[in-house]
Length: 85
Image 1 (tube, rainbow, N blue to C red):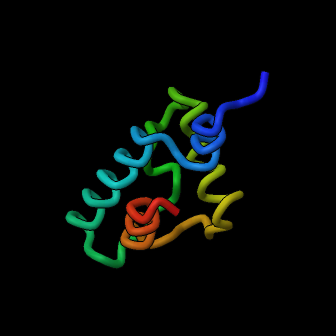
Image 2: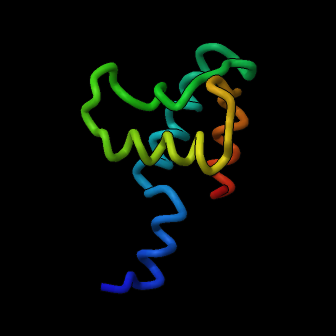
């Protein structure tokens, strides 16, 4: 079965629920620890692997798509997600 254009677009971008979660976590970390706080993509998930699909989506965006370091500034990640990169 051939994917529709909207399905193809969704595979390139992260889902809205993950995008919102990342922005919220970044905002919380920045508010608590300041503009220079760093985080990894694991910061968006519980200690147990309760959503492996979403974890892999975040990991692919972070590692494969953008080739980011393990720790990045929360401000940078928040702006990248808001810009839909």
